[in-house]
Image 1 (spheres, rainbow, N blue to C red):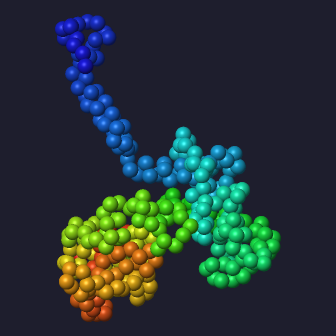
Image 2: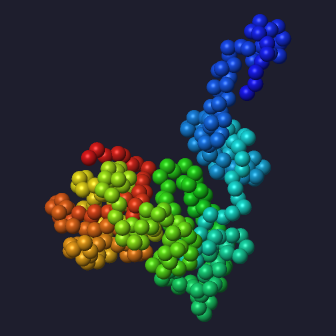
Image 3: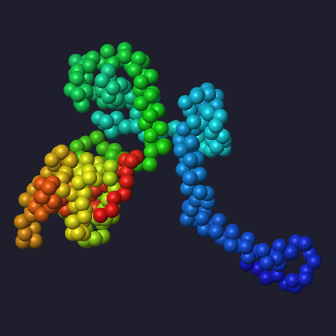
Length: 328
């Protein structure tokens, strides 16, 4: 800020922009740009930002050098890739399903079994007995020597899987959220996670409700009036599937209500609750023991007559590509 000791009729060219009425428009524009920079607001359209971000995910130093017709960056139609940064390739974001450790190209290479399941090399060798490895998902026994010989044959198929995975991650609008347990990256049973560990990845409200059996205030949860078809609700702590959108209804109680759980309480445990001088049935996640809410017998009769009264802080929503908003 400064004071110009000259009149409006000054003939000096360097002072003309400072005396012009356009200076106010310039100041407004500069203020908006600085405000956007401070608060990280995007200065371009959401469509343009999303499009460029999606293309940048696929851009690597090898693009254009080894032209690939399947690559959206190498294709001549995608000139928008010019000037965009390379995707970060220094750190893997693919985890071994057994150990939770990151895949890499040296110490923990991804190994594909003949049945198509992929695990880290370190976990397979650690769990192998008599040079044989048992697939945790199918319980099929494979020889490590056989896996080693077939690794090259299955590498092409593995690359296709990873290509589809990264393509989906960059283009899908409904990616599954990462659970709190996955963020911890621990190689242990979710029920063995300590309270201090949960506090690192849960908000204070989520921790109080899921780990201390608290209850959110009625009509305050984000999923109370949330009605979108084609999705599911999962445990906020471990990501276990709990309910589907089609079984959610507006009960008017102030909390998300469901008439049924997935596969008849597949991942839900019921416990008697005698707190506050009442007899109720508490429902918890059977995978990580997170408190979800309670189940009552005043639900829709056509669906069995039960009403799962669930805290919004205990669950997360995973949508689908064809999700549609429902009016209730």
